[in-house]
Every structure is written in structure tokens, then in C-alpha cells.
Image (tube, rainbow, N blue to C red; front, side, top):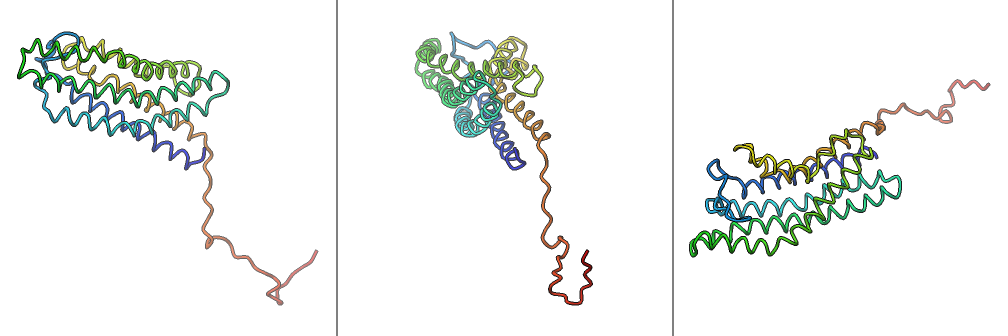
Length: 262
């Protein structure tokens, strides 16, 4: 890769990094809880803490996530190209294709899952003034359970497949990174978040942004790999301006020139 290609790749990966930060802020807006709202769930999903969530938080959350998805695709598509370039055998080629599929699935599924999850507080807030809170929570949970199948399928096709392929690539030393990079994936980050969710507040808030943080770590590792690649790329010397070149003399134009022929 030349310097221009590296610069272009760094820009695209940085856009992917920005996308993951927007995703984290978006999740934080609708899922954040205060210290007195830790145990406020009703059933499998509904949470009475949503009643205190401002409407602007839910609206901005959806807008930020929608804005993040094009940037996410740009960044992770570039990471796919990095995987593809390192394909040395049939297994590597198959892994690259699976990674590409997981990126496409992630763009679709992450937005679908996020909007669905943000709609649950909206439904609960709309039902609460007209129904008993228990009944409102039951309706909210039933709507969520009706959509749980597609959510699981999309999560496995996106985060699950991406994490598995990434771990195989790192384990096989396809990238010049330490094997600790195995942990830098959405599934590991989400699992760690679930564990920390049982910790006291505010440590439990880490679970709020854990899954998009896994995507953030992938982009960080990709930028580290790119920096290592750039050090191995020879620097092309810039040609000096024309004015800096030594003058060229044409002896035919100077009849008095002293020319010695050997």
C-alpha cells in the first residue's frame, strides 16, 4: 500500500470508530439508570425507570444510532478489506466472506434491534397513564417477546458471527497483534458487561455500553494494525520542483565551449 491508500484507510476506520462512539452514546441515553433505579424491572424486559426517561432522550437516541450506521458500514467494510488482503488459503478466503456477511448483517440488525428496544419505553410510557403499571408492563413484555426470535437470529448473524471469525483470525496470527485481541469483540464485551451489571452502581452502568464498546475495540485494533502496516511501507521521496534541478547546457549552442574528445 502507498501512503495515499494508508491515509484513505485510516480515515475510513476513524469514521467507523466515530460510529461506535455514537452507538455507545445512543445506548446510554435510553438505558441509563440512577442509583435508586437498579431493581425496577417488571417481568423480562419492561422497566419502571423508563417512566422517568425524557422523551428527548429516546428521540435523540434513535437519531444518533441512525446517523452511526452509514459510518459503521464504511469503517467495518474497510476492516473486511484488511481481512481479505491477508487471505492466504481457502480457509482465509471463507473467513473473509463470513466476515463480510457479518458486517452486512450488523448494519441491518443493529439498527433494527436498537429501534425495537427504544420503542419499548415509548409503549410503556404511552400505556402507563391509562392502565395499571403491572398490566402496562405485561403488554410491553408481550410485544417484546413477539420480536425476540428475529432479535436472536440477527444477533447471532451479526455480533456472534463477527466475533467468532475475528477470534479465529487472531488465533491463527493473520494479524500482527497480541492474542489479547481475542477479547476485543462484541460478544466478549457484552458478556463482561452482563457480569459487571451485578456490581454496585455506577460500575453497573458499564453494561449499558458494553456491546457497542466491543465494536469500538475492533476499530481500535484495526487502527493499530494499520499503523504497523504503515511502518513497513517505504516512503516515496518527493520529486524536487523543476526550479531546483541543475541547469542543462546544450554545447551545440555554444561554439566557444572547450570540449575535449577522448
